[in-house]
Image (cartoon, rainbow, N blue to C red; front, side, top):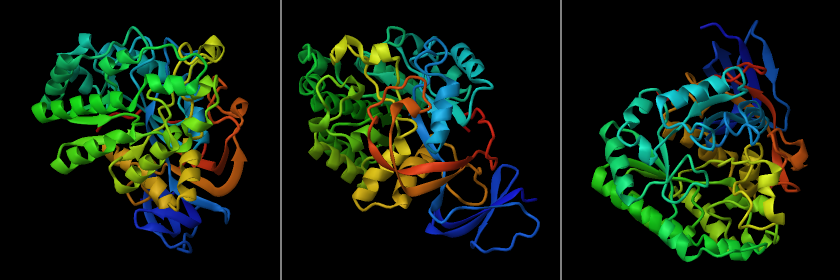
Length: 438
């Protein structure tokens, strides 16, 4: 194959570790990887700066783009610009909060049409499992969605209702029949109802309304349904460290259970969230420092499989509604552009390496979602690459982020690591493409 470009880096994160390398690119793919001084006569070259590390682009499997229907919250143009600026080269869009939600082939077509011509990174789509779509999930699977999201508690939007226990079993039995995947917002509504109080501006009071027991109980329900149906399931945005022994036991049992956590659960802790600071509101919530450290330990041990942003923005009037009342403001953290830097900042403080971070944010989510040509720098993979200045310090200013609404929990955060250059399919200014489950 002819070569279009070679990128030389004194540091590159490969499947074998971090080494100097020359990456040869042709036809949008990595053709070969050799030593940094490998001869390349006649091939255009890019030589990374001494402080830059060549990484495979991050694969973010949990992003709420919200277009169409709530494009004022976000949109494909702004979301994918934010992704690219943060070193994310592929994202998979959640089936809500767009209108219509992605719960049918027709709705998927609407979403794909809305995205056409607007993407700056590669974009794929999740389907939704809601009561009205049960019994017809296969048709959406055949159109290339990566799996089906459901809620076990109210989602916050009326057009995407949650599943009760019986409906969860129906969904998992149906999905197991064609080898699909169910991804679950796991909070138990019965537990939540017992804590249905008005927290006002008090963050500790808000956290108490979404206790760890709600997550643990819901995950127990998912695991029991997996045993009964044989379906694959994935727990989204785990925040409760109390659920980790349960998850570890299910994995040791051999159940096909996977779990993600999010950068905000690895970065923030409840003691440092100011009262009234609803930019930190998310469900499940940010918890204690001790809880955060247990999540890091579980990520390192493999009990938690990978990290995804759960980028879930809203307009400023919704996110800051109620003058700082956690019971009124919209829940969701805008962190797509900051996710790679935030995780790397926390990882380096705890003695982890960029090899670890690439595993958590590129290689594992790519493999889990079936994107076999992404997530690593090796021959045959897509040339979705990032020149990452790993030691460059920066302070986040929300008003300079690319996402549509300039409200973020990361505003003012001191982070390390900037994505200086990004290649999609080996081209620095290329648009993204829509990707489907293979």
